[in-house]
Length: 110
Image 1 (cartoon, rainbow, N blue to C red):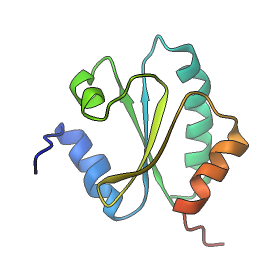
Image 2 (image 1 turned 90 degrees about the vertical axis):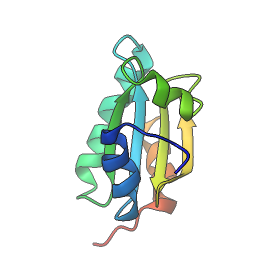
Image 3 (image 1 turned 120 degrees about the vertical axis):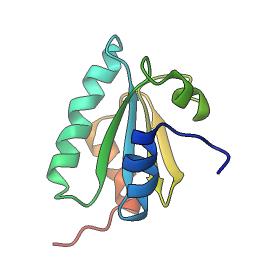
């Protein structure tokens, strides 16, 4: 594989995304918009009953990883399926918009 990811990212995102969608929140502690978006993503992940995973990546601590994915602005959110980015958005979005963004990728069984 040409991309060398940190072990945690390889295991928690690349490998797990073959089982279910993985949403990666690229953020930093100093980023105001990140502190607004983070709790919304966490709430949605918790209420999803395990249909998808949320992984948070601190861009200050993972600068090489952020570069590999071309992160230029944060918060940046990427959806992974089968080890590939299938969708993404940058910036704070309201909860209904994030729900609509998730819908095409998440199979919800009632």
